[in-house]
Length: 355
Image 1 (cartoon, rainbow, N blue to C red):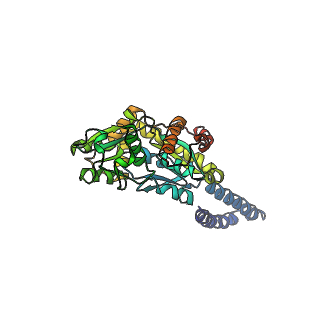
Image 2 (image 1 turned 120 degrees about the horizontal axis):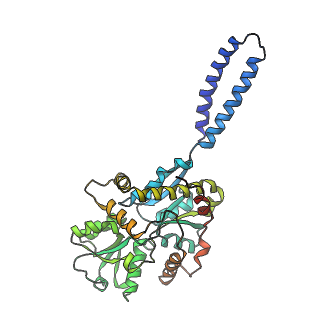
Image 3 (image 1 turned 60 degrees about the vertical axis):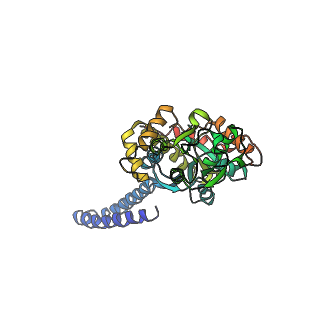
């Protein structure tokens, strides 16, 4: 932003000089004309520079965990940044734990992730706030090898996760809990992002893994199956919410409000344009044309109403996850999640959204 006004200044000033010399020679009878024109031109220059600065896009860095078939829905808001005076830069991460550190350090302005990750950080004193939930629906599954018929069959077996506190870890722990088992009854293997974990399962390295439902078609092809479906078996498990820091809310509030407006607008557009959204997913995740995961996750998300363009924050779901973290000793004590929510920027943003 700082160099752009200088470039405009150079070009406009040069034009002003040429214009002044031409107009001075055509008005020889008015001695004050050159001075008046000079003043007028410099007023215009200053005004044009001010307009340029006012409309120059603010950079806003938005973190996302591993572009997959759902990337069309999650990345579409970046295309709407210019509409709200923003350059939304998408930053990808291999797992959901790393973005918290980037957010706290100031390398990110906001990120979208499973609520369990920021809730755990908030419980340790991180100055973070939920500002919206773009994917509150539970489009998540536990996939298993063909010989695993029930959750009890996983006893003594390895399950691929992304480390303690991550979405697959918390989800799997909840499944183990619901089945009346203990965490020590299984072996958790840190195996990276969703695609890597699925490959580990397909290769027979582990017996199960939790990841996005978009892998269901591929699982069927490989003789794997969905053992637990969150939408059916654990509907309170929200998938994605947007988080930022108290500092961003305090120091970049205007940009934050415009960012939320872009996310709302872009998400609504994505849900209304299946082909375009699927194409964007393939570009962002570098998927080949034969990969049907973009269409699968789009159809599931729209049919089940898992994605919410209004970004409303499901407080009850967040509290359910907070309570689960307390039971798992991932946080020291259970708190009222209302203290971790700031809904004011979203309310302001919704007033900006327009066709």
